[in-house]
Length: 455
Ligand SMILES: Cc1cc2nc3c(=O)[nH]c(=O)nc-3n(C[C@H](O)[C@H](O)[C@H](O)COP(=O)(O)OP(=O)(O)OC[C@H]3O[C@@H](n4cnc5c(N)ncnc54)[C@H](O)[C@@H]3O)c2cc1C
Image: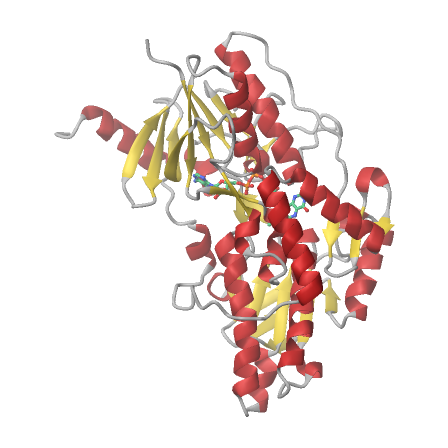
């Protein structure tokens, strides 16, 4: 007898938590588990700004998928590019560009999100996002490259442009990114005696009137004061009107000469979501509190890619796209898949938000664990303790702790690796956003494949 097949798409916070729970709770005879993922690791995204700024090595936030006592999942190295929920087939483009069909009985969609962009001239060609390990490593190299080139140049205009950096997005991801990278250039400039430190300028801009509104007025202002004290120029109520290779124009008309535009102005669900032809809520798949996609048998969705009702908040709210929710939803969805498999009732997902931690580098941090407002060293301790607790493997925790200690004691050497110097650097190249099929293409592909090679 063939075993039912559970296919999990995406090895992020949600997908990995789901797979680990399935491996623990299901006997190998009960079901076959497969995981579609382009990478062989789970990326610990909240520490990405620290990779971009060189405090952590890229490997320390890339958690192995195979380091687990109960590991037995079949890992399919590729990207799901479409799902046909009627035929119960997921179309996968492998990492060698082969297109294969993966049939399933239950599918758990956890492909996360991509950088949200707008129709701003030049944006997608000239901005970097911060959603992948490659982007973080690239940004670090790029920033050090600007220092190297400014140092070598005798042209004052070129120097000024290379030493200005613009970060768009005053949420926690953008604020942490600007703060951590400013620390990088602030420390690095001591090794560049030809560069006048006052020429280095970081701009953090956001269309909203406040930084990190989710932290509340007092903590948001405290973070803002920390950043301004460190020389970061914050412009609120402002966005980008135009981006070019050597300058960025703000919506207030200001033109900033720069070679560095980092775009962290929010996320939108993975394009995989739209291949199903299912209902969406602001781009995320509409799901029930049990994380089932209504009207689609055996389809579950969660994490950043799904609008999971936030029962703890009520009032029709949906869970925010955070790792905190994604991890917990992963465990609950695994239990619900098992319940479906065993013909038992499913349970809704419910979790009261534990708050937020924001590491601004050094001793600067703000945090709001369980509603308690913290600032400075206490917030820093909570932030670091939280990340260590949330990391899945002991070896990853140890790597991160060792990196933090080494960085605090010995600092950084600010070397450019050059590994990615010649690769395309647009958002879509890093995030592979142009590989997805339309619902019609998925259906046609699956029909052709079912009809056999002669069709
Ligand atoms: C810079 C930054 C800082 C953050 N800080 C925090 C924080 O402090 N606290 C917090 O709670 N949250 C934080 N977040 C948000 C948090 O990281 C996300 O909410 C969380 O990662 C969502 O989990 P997920 O499993 O839905 O998606 P992800 O963790 O993004 O995982 C999705 C996975 O699916 C893979 N994938 C994508 N498309 C496909 C496909 N088509 N087929 C197969 N696999 C696919 C991706 O490669 C990825 O591995 C931060 C995010 C960023 C970018």
